[in-house]
Amino acid sequence: MAEEEKTAKRKVLRKITPQRLKNIGLYYLKRFESSSDNLRRVLQKRIDEYAYQNRDFDKNEAYQWAEDLICQFEGYGYLNDERYAEIKIRDYLAAGKSARYIKGKLQAKGIGEETVEALLEEQEYDPYELAIKFARKKRIGCFRPDEAQRKECRQKDLAAIVRAGFDYDIARKICGMPAESECSEEF
Image 1 (cartoon, one colour):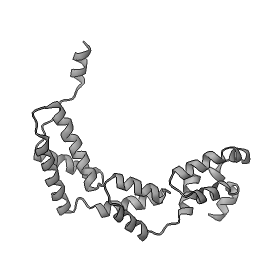
Image 2 (image 1 turned 90 degrees about the vertical axis):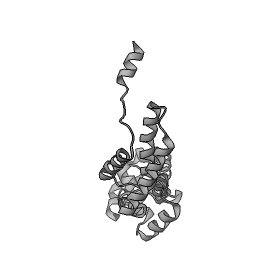
Image 3 (image 1 turned 135 degrees about the vertical axis):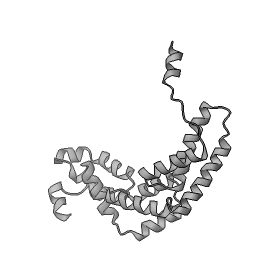
Image 4 (image 1 turned 90 degrees about the horizontal axis):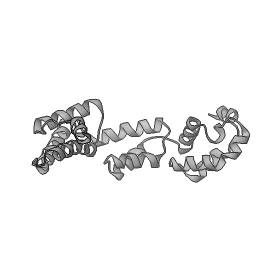
């Protein structure tokens, strides 16, 4: 009985064809801005899921369809890694993310390190201000409500700021800063 329930719950996927793959890609790009490498992963995941259910399906041929489709989308201007990276960098900087965090996220999406470095250099940002924004958002460091809690959690806050990708010196400044009321006067 348990096997019958498993097979009944398993969704039967529609056949992967070049047109279906194109529709999947267009629908994804309609909802999200994406890098070429990220779209490739999305399409390959769909191909793999279908190939898992249908053992006689030729994945390599479908992968080639995906590559052709990505080239076609790049030609149309639907995919542009540099535009994607610019948008993401701007969003991450507005959210108070560190340069190290941004580099890691974009490299995970398939954007080259050189491209990320060049785009980050074009942006005007201060790592210290980004760290302040991060600490304020997380309510750590000088943004903790009371002095006793601030002293008690100093190491924890320091570690959180460093894990977020900020330099140790910046993290020390933020954890050794005066209370929030005095911080908010500066910023």
